[in-house]
Length: 306
Image 1 (tube, rainbow, N blue to C red):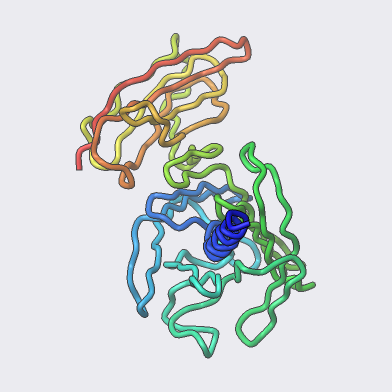
Image 2 (image 1 turned 180 degrees about the vertical axis):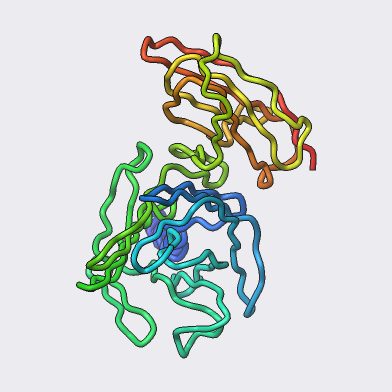
């Protein structure tokens, strides 16, 4: 009987801890976490590059690359606001807040409320500074794994927003619009806590430097090498195919997918920003699969020194 009571107590404690921390996993905030989005005319890469302290709170700051999607309301980020700000998730309320010079809420100072991640299906919040509903909390297959999701937005006839948060991933899709137009993003891939999901090749970072058809497939040595923190990879594609370019650490663990897409014959160059990674030996590898199922692979060594 005592064993049963202890087991029940442990389950109760673990469920309480889990529920308290659970909401934060819908937007994993950690330095180095990276998200790649495309949508309409926009293609953007967001990487958490540091933290800052303000108003006695810890905020996470972002490095942004690429072109923002734009519609009638102007350009927007995957958070469906016009710029990338430092953000935090309140440990008590689960509110997602951005750091700004002003505020839309009388009970907030220097912050704007973006979403309430504790909302459940059917919940609606409507007050002087925030209006949103939770459409659903369905599970979906995301990057081959069934994950819990949460879709939040503003269900207004003349103006609407929708963001789907995925447990362990972050914002998976975002859409805003009105009668005249709409714009938004979908997640291509991400790096969360060092694990790569989907395609993290950033389209803006791929440069075709020669369209002539090479005689052979090849992968050149990166330059500069050693490097800090950016280096460049040059390769030649002799036949159209699926090209995957990855980076692995010294133990062979894949740490980033730089490219995973169809390419036409030519000579290309891709950049890698390793500012979120520690000094050490890394390997980069190219794999090309053509329509004939022929596969070309090659890998080379490089050194990051900070």
